[in-house]
Image (cartoon, rainbow, N blue to C red; front, side, top):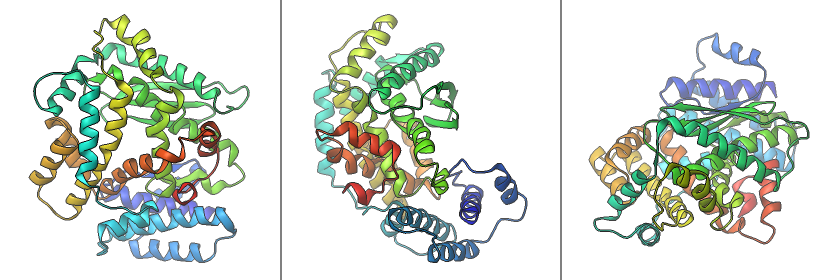
Length: 386
């Protein structure tokens, strides 16, 4: 799969140099990275031709071939977008993500707003103001964030072990780093990784397990660790383009990860005992699980805003939409608007809502743990869970 790895690395270089940032999870040989970094970047037309040639000559069949085809289709679509192809945004996103991307009706967000209103402490003023006040009331002192995240990592790893078998003798060592970028988890192999926590905004204690479960266990780091073991015989899975159909499934698992590891109100009870009470943050009767569920639904508003941005709507209109429906603050809106205007992030953000919705009913079955184990250890495409 050397040709596939080289193509993915060259595609990622093109995207990064176009302002989209790196979009590749790469666990292949370092020598190939050096080989791609040395020469002039490959032109988009050449990358498209290489995608076509590889797809026409995939050396295996069945589901394995379907997974590789999905990666190649996504890469080709992103290269064509960077090259200025005139493809309607919903069709471009479908090629990348493997799901039908449609504008979400605002009544879906109205229902999420009603759920939020009932879950937040009662109070005067608009819903967005109440949400931001609730977030502020749960802010963690910055010098305590890293230790709390480490404690949450230990708890989520222990709970993940009750769902899926982690490799025997593997010492899980996940470091914590405060960073101005978005929350994210990086797996470096051999049980080691890093969880990056955004310190551009105050950290909300109520989001602790929501973030750590998503980025770590049983979310992204756990998935990378386990698929590295279970799919070692399929080396193409060590080279994964993030904006692709498997990414949609991964983000769906990430957004459901807290509820998988902490059913019902278990997350809120753990946070109350381990975080709120020691930090003397008053209990206010809010329902953390309902708040997180509603906010997951509001990723659909981000997707609608991405479509508005792709249509060339003015910044003021896109910003107003994000404030009205996603309930973002001024600072959050400024950050989101800048992100959605980049060449790839408008497509990237669609994976959150569609992944969450895709798994919402599929994962909520009596054999939930078996299904979660499949998500963590097998190559799964959106079509596999419809």
